[in-house]
Image (cartoon, rainbow, N blue to C red):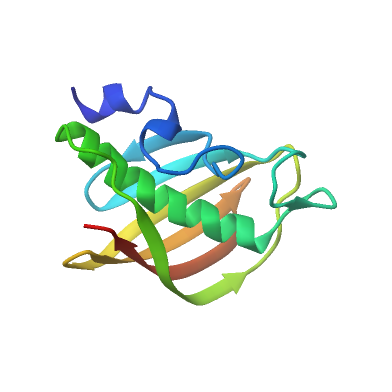
Length: 142
């Protein structure tokens, strides 16, 4: 199976999270360096407050976007999707909180990987405007 066929699958196949903690609607593209996802922001999302998607929700979305890439490559290699967690968040720059009904587009780039720790850069956009950007260290449970 190739990546394009995998991208047609439900995102829960690539991440360990389950409802109500799933912060991805679709994986748009994925390669070894970058992954792009979308999230349809809904009023019933646990990170939605007063019609806006929270900073915490966007940070979780960035982490899950990074996790989806790891999960996709695990599936390609017939391996179990690993569990990971956020080791550190830095360089957070919040510009705005998107509204319910908007589509959050997220881009995550792998900056460096050492053993089971990956440093990523993540950005979320709505209608072409950056909402948040940050760096994260993601630790994968071996």
